[in-house]
Length: 183
Image (cartoon, rainbow, N blue to C red; front, side, top):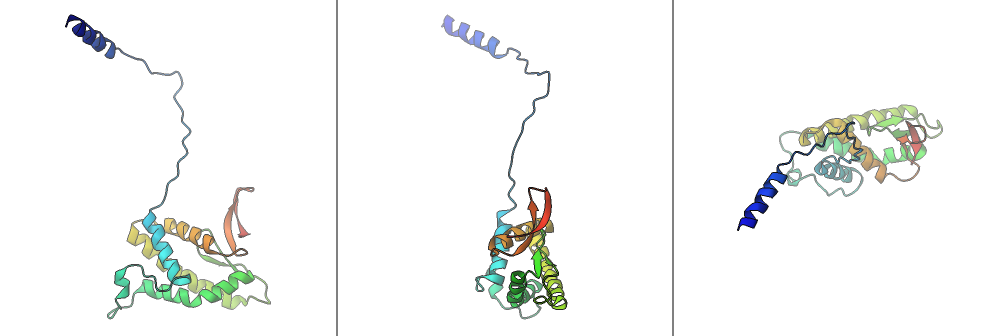
């Protein structure tokens, strides 16, 4: 019994000993982290883009299945207009008439005059960007994030969906700047 008390007393004294962890220089850590934007925002962006370019039967939620009787839904109208002009935009992309900037908006690239009617391209770009802004803002408001986060997610989604040859404003690691590059 006496040995046990002595061992506990020694452990208590040694356990309470002061240890100096101070260093002459502050400790520095190199931490690499990846921050994912909310997964539900990514899923919603994918659902909207599927409605425009892919699975036209896919809806954002079950409420979308109920027809709006009293007032028009600006989000659904913007999606419908984008779906209606999708084939024209794809043709202009393929011809090099337009590209998509890093904020997921279209840009008139003044492509070859033989293929690109500048007045028509500009009108399509303005209409498309107007509808994109409606959709991005709605998605940001609904999910409590800023619009720039939604734009980044949409840009990544569009880049993944686009075929080779489409032009995007992408980061060029060699120059350290954003440039218009073909995918």
